[in-house]
Amino acid sequence: MSEQTATAHVPPDDPDRRLTVVDPDDRGLQHVGVVSDTYTVLITAEQTAGRYAMLDMLIPPGGGPPPHRHDFEEQFHLLDGEIELTFRGEKVTVRAGQTVNVPARAPHHFTNAADRTARMLCIVSPPGLEQYFADFGEKLPSRTSPAPVLGAGPRRGGAAAKGRGRRAAGRALPHREPAARHGGGDMRVLAIGAAGAAAGMVVPALVQRGIEVRGLVHDPATEEVAQRAGAAETVVADLTDVDALTAAADGVDGVFGIIPAFAPDEAGIGVNVVEAVTHAGARKVVFSSVYHPSLTALSNHRDKMPAEAALYESDLDFTILQPAIFMAQIAGLWQSARATGTIAQAYSADSRMAYVHYRDVAEVAATAFVDDRLAYGTFELAAPGMYTRHDLAALMGEALGRPVTAQSPDFASWAGGAGMPDGPLREGLKTMTAHYDEHGFHGGNALVLETLLGRRPTTVPDFIEELSRS
Image (tube, rainbow, N blue to C red; front, top):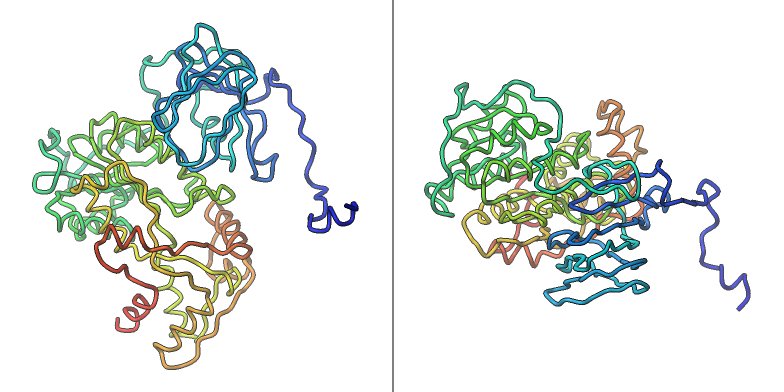
């Protein structure tokens, strides 16, 4: 085979990428203590253009993580010693010189059952785990530094308290023990973001199942919004403050959590919520994550993974929901179609996108608090099919009785027209729209959602028809 033939389908060299050479004993690398182990980040996602990451791991006798699973491939190559790996309940001993691959999503854990420290290389693909460790592990001076001993007390994360405390319609909330039974009736649930467009749909769904709702909001001015949605009481708290979150969750049976996309510390907020729920003694968490969190090039996807991992590694009863793009975005396009006959977003009008009506997600979320069949499950939620912006324009044109045109302005024009200021949101959306332009947002398998709802999910044509009647 000629060199020309062998490289015919290989993209050209990227001169901006650089050779990476690292010394694992370089004190300038990220060395972190995770559980009882010491991990060194050798190769980062940035250095591999998002393809993989590599870590050097020291596992002391008795060390290793608890049972968990995650949405990425994980390879271990034992350099020294041995580990006992439990994969789907089956134990296997991995010795120095051997390599093992753990498939994505498979339950597993490992421990060092020997009497000397084991050392291994770990490759994760796609990356993201290394950043989680770097963000939330205990910083250590070197590769061989021992990790802090577990049980030395919880590590508080987040910013200092804002001093707002707990309040219900302006009054301090009395402490109450969690309800004795796991179901509707006397169950109490803390709904994070209760005044928001998404969680605001969860509140009435919970109330309909006989669940008393405590709404958590960030801004005191929005407490009334949460109360109108059905919250019996409200609490104001900063999501970066673990102590405030712990106080907010005091006396509830469960917590519904959703993290603002592109928040400055989106990954940390999710972990804070899990930590706070654990400290408060609640039993159940329903976490609204994101469709395809393994799309690590997108921060609003990648930064949901630490919260998911924290739940998998906890003793909490959890249900993780991974919704596709909210159909509420289509509502904004509908207003433009009515006013101007055009709909515009800053990515290709030919990109195929998967959607879901968050009202359906809210119904599943509320059900998860009263139906144990959803316990310890992770569920992708999407309406059937994928739609290009041309498809949306055609559906809207049919509903309006006049042509609607799909447009694709560049990001700067689109963001400027929306009056979007510089900051994490704008940068996150810029990256996201570029990804959508190249790849779309594929999915649209509605089997899981239809099964959980026990009915046909709301489709994109259904939603546009609803908009046309409003």
